[in-house]
Structure formats: structure tokens, C-alpha cells
Image (cartoon, rainbow, N blue to C red):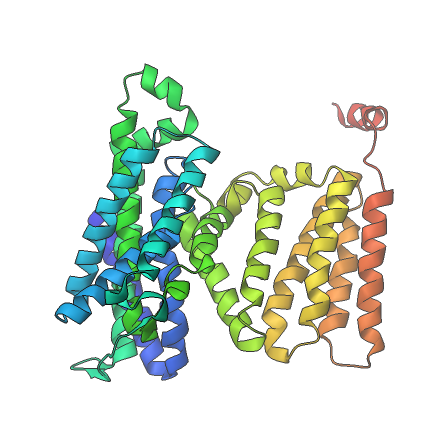
Length: 423
């Protein structure tokens, strides 16, 4: 598919989403949708450096904050239209990304990651002591209540973030399928071999840091107008650094589609958790899903779809199966105590338990093992007496015990079966 056609399809989908939200008429959808779209841009931007090139960046919040504080700086000096602020935020963050890359890209692995984290700490300290942009006290940004032809200002911000998400996704897809993307892939696979083959690795890494930083800056530029009051703790929040890494990892880091899937999945779950439970649960959910992803699907959801055997090998060790099962059972008992609106989060973890049981059951020759957590989920969701929750707990306990005690068939047992199937 050509880039122009892909861009038009993305723009049409974005227009359909905006029209659907306007038709529903619930302003919360625009508030929550803005955050999800913001994470799509951040995850896509991180993936250009961390996924395509293989350099893990812990300083995502710094580039996001640079875009936000460039808007605050210009708002105090002379208010400008937000589209122009987005361009300026991209330029500022891109220049800082270029400088950071030039200073740190000679480092590799954990050393580079620590250097990016140190850069975020230095920039936060600078902003905290810069009184012109509010310092530690923060700064208010007064926004208009409405925009001509669009209406509510939040709708306008949502539309802008929709456009940024389309641009970020299209940019990532173009890079992935270009010579630049192939150069990034050689660095990710084996940088020493790429250098020996004549690939200009330093130049490519500088391009990656610049593009990644610029896209993160565009996500941060409208943020002061969305939140209304910007302070260092909100601009440099841990959520941005963690989510920008977790979303591509969960979706898949080798394609533009992975960050999109991860951002929609995790971003939506976090918004549901914020409304139904509390915002403090967000990072707990992200952490648990990262544990699942790293063990079950190290290449993300896309990699799991392409190679379904990876989860089977992950639960081959009974201890690993038990650990994963317990980790995903624990949040169920907390979520079940909440309101009915927390059930979507509960479904996610029940689905993971069924999947783990199914993969372990296939490995030991007892695929019916997945019926136990499935029965537990039914008992948990069906309205009835309190003892149904005890049935769900017993189903989980039986599945855990079965997964630990049942052993895979030995090679000696498989030989007669193989011979009987031979022609």
C-alpha cells in the first residue's frame, strides 16, 4: 500500500472516530480519548529509537515536558496558535534529541538508558528552578472555552491529537519500509556488523533520536492547554516514561502497528481503571502486563500471533507457570471487590489465566485444563450467592495444582504413538 493511500485511510478513520464521539455527545470520551491518542504518539515516537534502532530510552518524559514547557514559555511571552506551538515544540525537542544523541549514543545498552534517565533528571531540575515558567509552583494556562466551527475547546484539542497520531503512525510506517528503517534494523540486530559493512551507524542513530524526540515534543505541546495547570511533577510524570516503553513492548516493537495496539489497549485500560478504581492502579496494571508480556510474548502481541509456540515454551517450566498464574490471580481478588464497572479489567486477567492454562494443558497433553479458569470466570461473573466466588477460587487452585503436578509426556511415550501414525 502506498504511503499516500495509507495516510488517507488513517485520516478517514480519525475523522470517523471524531464524528462518532461528537454523535455520542459525552465530553468524557474526548478527555479520555485525548490521553489515549497522546500515548499513541509517545509510544510510536519511542519505538523509532527503542524498537527500530534498539536503543532503550528512559527519558521520554523529558522530551514530552520540553514540548509542554515550550508552549508555557511562549504563552507567557506571546500566545500563539496551538498548531504553531506544536511545530515549535517539535523543533525544540528534536534539537535536544540531536544533542542528547551526539553526547550519549557512543554508549550502548544499559549505559545509554541510564544516560537518558540522567538527562530527564537534569531537565526537571532546570525547570523546577526556572521561575519564568512557574518553577516548582507550576504555571496556569488559561484556554478559551470554545473554538469557531468546532465548539468546545477540548474537542479542538482532541482533533489536534488525532492529527498528530495520524502523522506519527504514517511517519513510523514510512521509516519502517524505507532504507532508513533497514539501516535502523541493522543497528538493532548487530551494530558491530553494521559498522563493518559500512553502515553510517552514528548518523542513523542521530536521525533516530531527533525524530523520536521531535514526535514526543509534539505530544507535549498541547498538554498545558489540556490540563490547564502545568507543574514539573505532572510534565515529568513517571507514567509517560513507563507507558511509552510498556506500550510498544506489549504491542510489538518491530512494526508501526505494535505501539498502536499497545497504546489503545493499555491506554483504554488505564482510563477505565482511573474511573472505576483510582489512578494509582494504572501503573500496577501496566507492571503486571509487562511481566506477562516479557515472559509469554517477548516480541509483543504481534510476535505472539506470528509465533504461537513462544507461550508454550514459556510455561514449560512448572515454576514459571505457577508464578505467572499467581501474579494474574492476585488482581482478580482486588478488582472483584470494586464496582461492576471494573469488570472489563477483570476480564483481561481471566483471559490471561485461560490462555496460560490452555498452553500448559497442551504441553502436558491435557488441553481441558483451560476449562478450570474458564469455569472460574463464569462463576465470578454470574450473579448469585457469595459462595460462587469460592467456586472460582477453587477452580483457580485446581488449575494451579494440575499445572504443577501434571508432567509433559516423555519421549519414550511419544515414540509408539509416532510409529502408529506412520504409513
